[in-house]
Length: 359
Image (cartoon, rainbow, N blue to C red; front, side, top):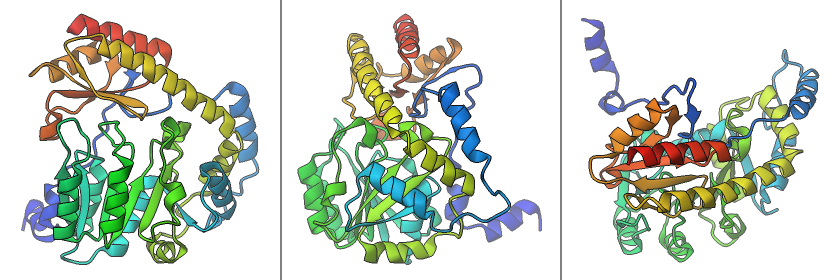
């Protein structure tokens, strides 16, 4: 039996059919493709952080519950006192933990479409069905279709990205309240882009016993740290926590997270500046009449080019030293679509200048 025959025999067909999550190299490019905070730490802050790291006992296991970091996260994210929290190695791990907790053959994971690709990927790996409910053409939530699908499919968990990735818009809060009221399973509101919007369902946790809220520090400026938070009713988190691998938050991540959250005013100021730059970038894109630009409450903007132009514009920008995200071909609803992360003012200006030259 050849190696490929062994793989074909032993690996589940659903896994063989998946594509691994691809991240393109960005060497020597202006990086506007991954929804990162563009500001690096100051030299003084780095020095203070390195001094903290000197005290780390790297030969010892970390606190398995990351209790001090949990308390810092609770305060920083304004989690209600009645809710419990679990920390994950990025919110991706928490999505995986939720799915594993509920994974029974025949059960369904549901989400709007298009949305964050890892919902489908993780559901498939967990051997659960996945139901994608198409958004309207303007990427708003199709409330009637969503409610009908919930009633028919009875999903074990519904993931709602709020604001939605990759479209950037907020779904109507009233629709989400109806989903929470109708759904018999869990409803996870993924607030990865919370620093860039005033909307949140965290204050609603006491109102619905099936509501969980995800947060991350990645978008606020700590993407390299890989630290996410899940908040919800203690009874749910007690069960989900059983799927968490021991010591999932390293000692380096714990002390770095504690240090960073002690300086959260800096990240709040940066998020405010990103909102300001988002408005300027939005205006610049809207001035280009060849594009359809979609509203955003995140730190990126989705736009649609003329038919057949997206890939050529993407490659042209790359040749000009600017990397954005090409979504054309990733989903039928995203044909001719590109997504740009809000960068530094000079990066945004360079992007707009290069884009004008390509249109």
